[in-house]
Length: 149
Image 1: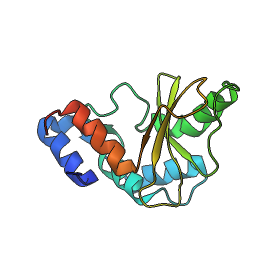
Image 2: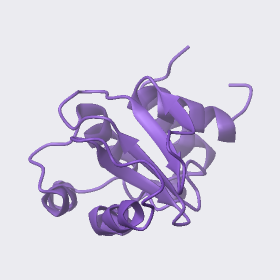
Image 3: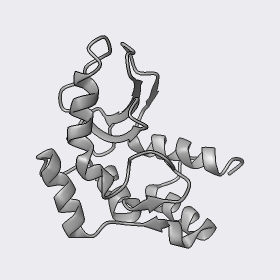
């Protein structure tokens, strides 16, 4: 059963209410401006509005939340420039998270409502993981922190 992003946020809030917080419209606008994008994919916008400052144990230790995501464009440009033996970021893709500087998560397209997600490790020529949608990615992360759901 695939949970909606709002269901995931609600489940995380039940477990630890203080650890889940979304972004304001002004903060979301600031993030979009950093990427030079008018609108992010609808499901990512929903994630940001509900969990853009924190999502409980989901992506804990990963730069995926405000204010760190304001530097995501610069950091991802550096990641791909510093890894000439690895793969390039596909055209139109948006990096939404980085883990400890050696892994990047991106959405394949900024124009789809719920785009596929890929995970790449530095130096690798192909993604090490792939999800059919951003919602599927969040569901897999939620199941990692709430097994047996």
